Length: 39
Image (tube, rainbow, N blue to C red; front, side):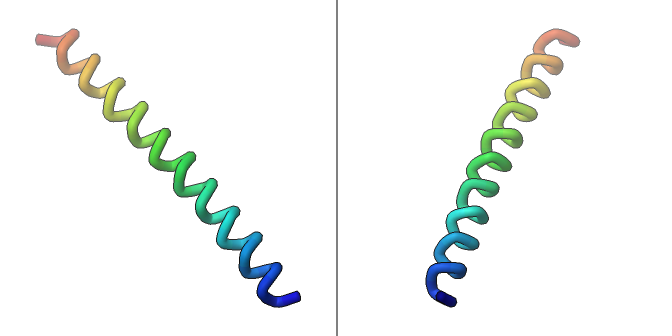
């Protein structure tokens, strides 16, 4: 029971981390585009 809960919690954290990394990546791309645009 406990290990199953632990695994699902870990899976949720992993998916959240992937989502966060994707978001940070998109923000960085957007910032770079804005910087190039303003030059």
